Image (cartoon, rainbow, N blue to C red; front, side, top):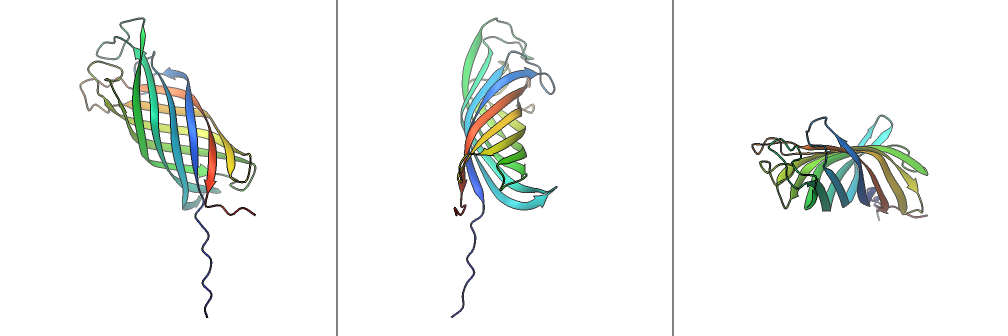
Length: 193
């Protein structure tokens, strides 16, 4: 009788994370009084081997709770025409992403992550001449801190969050934001000894 080798499950994890804005700036955008808060779920799967002494993971993220704070009135370019703010709900999906994770089996694990996806709002974002649907680009540097064999604390102190419609509409004010992401990670398919 032939023994078949036991196949180890692929290391993967799910993180529940929320983003708090630090502020926005004008790198690829124009509005300055816009901020976004998020609460979402990220799935990371060790799929692409190693690079620069890190493990390269495939990343996908779903953010069912997105809240945009923007001026109640804005011009074509997204410049505020009112001192008042309104909250606009939305949702985001980022199916294309990667993560470089160093020191996977250690207590402190630094990483870099990048994601590309779409974000939609219930109202036109940033300008009355803009669009409901937008492109979302994220980049972050962070660290995971081991709490138990299956759970980690996850902190992204530097999260770059870009939203724009890529000129799918007449106006494309966009928004660039720096934020902090905090969350908890649960390891899937990991053998506990």
